[in-house]
Length: 152
View 1 (cartoon, one colour):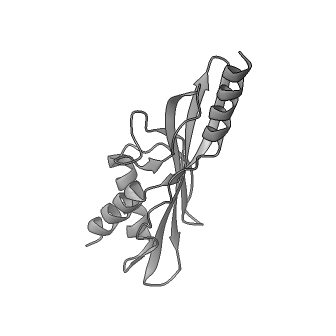
View 2 (spheres, helix red, strand yellow):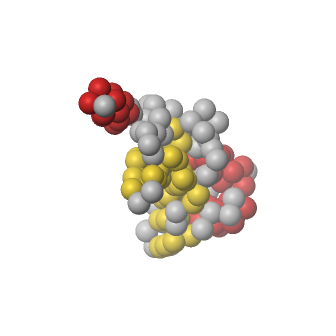
View 3 (tube, rainbow, N blue to C red):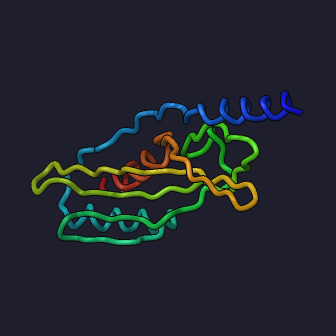
């Protein structure tokens, strides 16, 4: 029995040492040769197309922040974030992300910067754990590309 408990503790501790894979670099920030008004409108249109929920926006600072977005059922290889393995006995419940889009600069060219934070939510009975994840850069690049295409 003691050996079984010791083995379970070793497995649990080994799982605690895993880390999310390193993020891929996104093309960020992107220089944009257009007026602030045109960029702002393109960013809002892109967010609407992608159904990204706006939590806060401040046009005077050029900053838009989304609320948490669920990316349930995505995996490390094909999804928007890489979270690594989950410690046993926890089970993945959700992956979610939050984005901040900034329009930087007062003169042409301005820059559009898309940054994100991701986390994985794992659970076992009453134990809930939130683990930071690394962005793959895919969604940030998609947002930047869509904004740029709208301005051409």
